[in-house]
Length: 421
Image 1 (cartoon, one colour):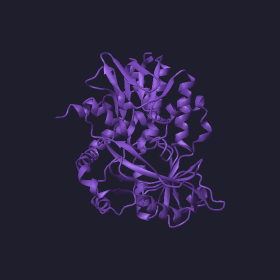
Image 2 (cartoon, rainbow, N blue to C red):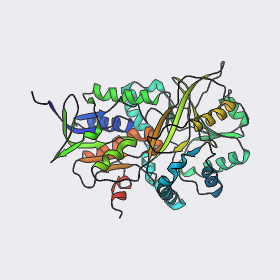
Image 3 (cartoon, rainbow, N blue to C red):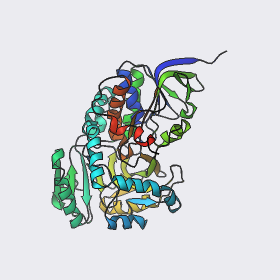
Image 4 (cartoon, rainbow, N blue to C red):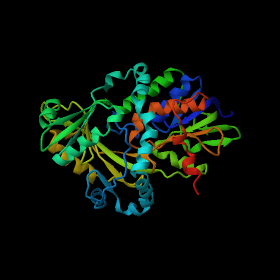
């Protein structure tokens, strides 16, 4: 008996927030879509974040340019950024490119080019949130970034004022004002900024899974399979799973930090690096309540109220994507967090670890594969995969179906890397 052949218009590889959103947008444009992932939707990078739809992040996360910060990171004693020493030589060339792109003029250009995506991030989530019935998981009260030193607080307030042209909503909070919004915060805090535009969610993995359920409820097919099996046969893209062989005229690589593995099979070498991160959930002591996600601007961690408890997410760890976990950064962040908020016992048996896929110019790749008809890319969203998943899905959906894109897609093109010598 021959193998079952199943035909669709598009195969989307990866059921994180980006892949699920691409599948939904293509489906809404009349395309039959097969969505393939090795595991459950939203179980990887889309699961392990602070739950922010970050409308206020209008300036990309740049490499620091001041010597004092660079030296602090180089010492490997910073809680915000750590690196595994045996990996440093391997990533130094990438860090040099990241540093180069972070110069003022190039950073401002990246900010302008990312702004059309950032501006629409909440609206595109809202497009799915109602039908997917996840609005109860979303809060529209923003997040708070606090500072322990008066000088850091003063500089942050000045920096926020310089963002005036972006028309962001925020409040500058002295210690008394912060106490009124977060009565359970304790310790030595000089002040805070309350960014009011972002939407926060109490279970980002559940949101992604709900979007995937919406996709299947609308007739899409979600399949368990290994993306490494993707093959091109003439004008057809195919992948074989234990259930069937799936064929389509187009394929989308939306595998987050695993995208590069498959791209290299087809001859594409992108400068993709990984900013790893960890999280743990904790109970709150007594009657303590955390009303907003709060970020320690100096230590780089975030405490977020989640369905499972208070989630503590660490800053950046520079290491090979699949290297063993190193819990020192998590332990350091926990020590500081306990001085700020009355965390109780840990809910999780061990920290969760994930990897943010990052490109040195601080923009994702969204668009056609330069040398293969019918192959499309969408990955490299760094810190903003959950934020930008739905708006990325819209842009790629428009490009793949011949619609007029809502913004110029050229800044995100793969050719910006493949055309270099």
